[in-house]
Image (spheres, rainbow, N blue to C red):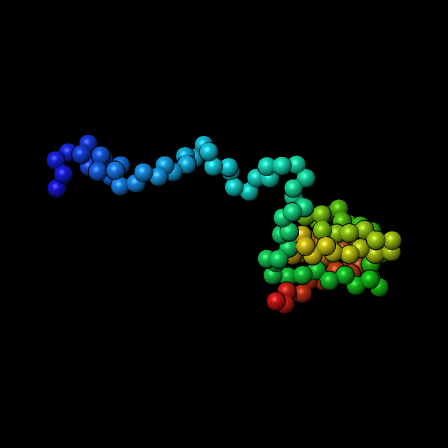
Length: 109
C-alpha cells in the first residue's frame, strides 16, 4: 500500500506521458461547424419505413412538403417526390396527405 494519496497520484501520473484533450477542446457533438455542410450528411439510411407516393392520387396540395421536418419532399410539376437521401421515415407526410397518396412501407435492406 502507498504511503499517502500524493504518492499514489505521482505514480498514476507517471504511467502515461500522453496528454488527453480536455472538454473545452473537443467540439460539441451533432454541430455543423461550417455553413452549408448539412448536404454532406445523408441521414436517410437508418429509417425503418419508407414513404411511397402514388402519383395517380397526388393532387399536389404540398401539405407533405410543408410538414416534412427534413425537407425531403421534392416539388414536381404534377406531383411530389421523396429525396430518400435525407428522409428519416417519420411518416408525417403520409399522415398529413388528405388524399392518402403517400403510404409508408417497411424499408427493405
